[in-house]
Length: 431
Image (cartoon, rainbow, N blue to C red; front, side, top):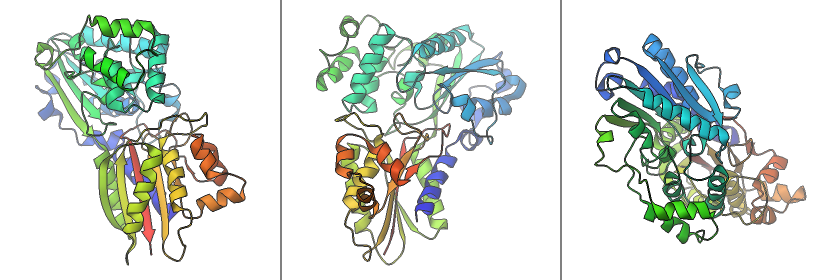
């Protein structure tokens, strides 16, 4: 069953990799003119999937592509799967994630310069995916102050909507500013969503769409998480002065901008469902909007799975993105923390009653600052841990899920996948 759970997760990931996604793109419908009619086609890519997307786009457009650049996490180029074409014409830039660094600023300036070089008869093709806010950003405040603000929002358990409301208003790049830089050229943005609800203004901080949030909203987020006095003075001053608001829906820069969603969590979950059914499970896609504290959500999903147990083998599927509020100084991520909480919820479930495997994994192949995407748990996980001298409750309290599952050999380690549509949870139940 653990092999089945991993294969179902892998099917979800494979469906949302660049070559599969871009095969479905109807260029002639989405672009306002045939591609041959543009003077130049220029690529600007940002996010964990952008290198893979750029390679596929190069192969599709061939000589119609003039130039471009894409920014991915440091080290990502060395991990590109051999099944995906490596970009030759598009420059690949490395930058920091989950915290921006100097590479992030250089990348943002490079992409803004590419956009600014486009003229009215040109097409700027923007390839957007999760992680773009950190990977590609230039700031109105000192870099170290932006980094400190990012860290505080992460540690407070802020969700991506709240975080990006603040981050867009510290940014020279997000919140529609890339579209502003490209005006009056035509812009076509293809987006892989890592956001619950697929809000285009939140994914990678929405560089090509209007921003509905304001400086007042950014201040309200920091106050709601009791962070206003804790962020650097430069951040408070910039948000208070509100000198350069992000472009809104009535801004003329969006008149020639088209932004299309091509990859979603639901698309991945549908592929997972088909794989589960091919393996003999009665599969049900429960939800693609799972949010909340990972340690609270894990037991909730386990209860749903146990309640679904019946005569036939069952597979329950969820997707979304939970959060972790840091309480300790351990090592882990939201998927491993959810699996650890699930292991405790499964502790003591009678083996005779049913067999159950619960797996939670990030579709980007990375969970927190680790080399794992997540982990899986069974009714025997907690007992096995205690036999090895591990206390599951203490590891959960310390946000220390990675060493826990590493000792047990129950980490999910696919490596970087060069895509990102949030997380997938798989529960297999056999009575």
